[in-house]
Length: 329
Image (tube, rainbow, N blue to C red; front, top):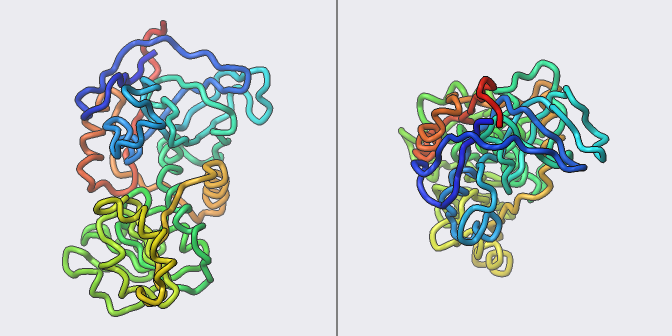
């Protein structure tokens, strides 16, 4: 089969397309013919091993898994003898931030990391549903949201931001979204009540106050956004921040509330991927969630796809389409 190979950490130019042996599923695994995958922030961080501590998961000196990829959509070709939730022929999609090796024509994965696709969902749409939504939901489930509250989402057009706007909207939250001029219509279509064009104004000078500020691109800070928060409010970022402040401030700010105006920062430790996937599928079926697709690349252009994502300006997701006409080994 064709697969993207990744044998040492570094820039996208180190990736290469090769012929490798088709995998065989274990007793609790699925063999999936991959129809579409994505390149996302998680993938880009993984191939470079940045931040460095990612190596504790991906491999200290070199990658444990030599095929990259985290999101996927495809068809179950075979199942292990212990698999009960899915069968051959089922259309499935899924995600695992530890790596699924989905940038290949075939992959194997534990049955808990894949769920059945809604009938009307295309593979390209399905592939881009989970990475951003999982991280977005782990912003939301760290706070006590109440219907009618106001939340500001910085970076509302990325995979995490576009998912956050939709999830918040589905929970009855009033969303103020920060994006570029050319994305205003998109963000409003996702459910934002108010949009701030960062090309024309600094969102940190907004006079409104918010229950929470979700920085889904990690380009601001608690100190810059603190005055935007209502008393009892919280700032959450998708990035570690300058000198990893977004890891340490969540430990400190709850202890010094009188000094911060009873405002804190929270680290959105992403847990329970399956729970996020099931929620997203339910919202898709209710017409309350859709994957935003920026660009599509064939598997043969994987390096170009990574370089595009690393520029940091994508809207939603970058999809990799995968053909199946190569000879198998």
